[in-house]
Length: 391
Ligand SMILES: *Cc1c(COP(=O)(O)O)cnc(C)c1O
Image 1 (cartoon, protein in one colour):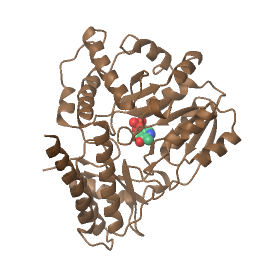
Image 2: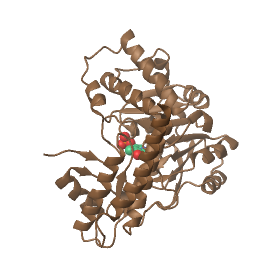
Image 3: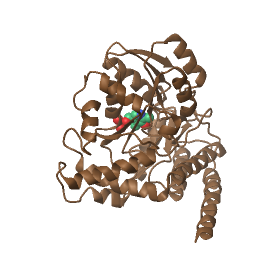
Image 4: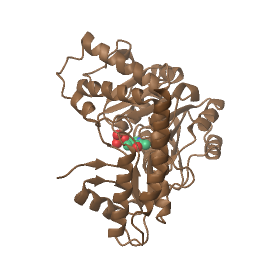
């Protein structure tokens, strides 16, 4: 018997009813039936993202939405500030250069984060930047950036702020209108409990105005065309019909659980995994600002992260992600986002312990599991109390 337990920071596990919704009868996308599905999903996305502005769904993974963002608001030769403290920050810079922007790239150590100081310095060095590009959760390092504070500085300097919340949403809070974000990008396959295939992008009024005045230079995910179609509750080209049928079910489930509960779930699971790793004697890459999406555990001397991930996957069907770039073998990343309950988190910790033991790490089996159990049990008991009190 072989199950697949995905503790990777995307793709993640998909609930059966979301998966099955993709098998419903195909409907045509230029119909009232599809338009009402679109409108339902759209208003739910607005609620979850905390915005009254348009939220576009694009066919493609998260990177397609990142590219659409840059192509939509910047013209060739215009300046952008990109913070590169990991693979995905680097991606903002790479896309920007590919699309001919002048990129002021701020590169820093992966154990560090995009601080207000770094932003203020970048704005001094690059005062004519149009937009600032950051990650809510930098998935290669697990770090959470102080997006709210960064957005305040951007507003003071009259810069657009573009946030990659591809792994961060909806695991971590990021209310778009309240925090004054201009562009928020996410994707279906991480915290949203869906298969890969949809990029999602929300635009503030300021960002929409930029899109209107910026000549199109990418065609497929041209935001001007997509905004125009959006006004008619539709897409510019053929819609991802089945993906929207799945999105509808996934959004119902997220809203039924409640955004606060989703945040709390990832946070407590993060506490459990962090607590377990430390109890076992491991260090974390992101001690400065650990995010709640995933935990990057530093490997001891002589143990290669990619080997650990491969061993768990090949032998047990347990999926962890090794590191990326220079960190390929230096860390193992344990996810706690999406369709993952507390008991699956205990499973992840147990498997991680067993794998580290297999690779000769000097650890005591059960030591991390115990800490995870204590943290998660306290939360389960608190939940049970709340349920009893409300019934
Ligand atoms: C996964 C991820 C991306 C890339 O998304 P794809 O869906 O693989 O294109 C970008 N940014 C962050 C923070 C991510 O976690």
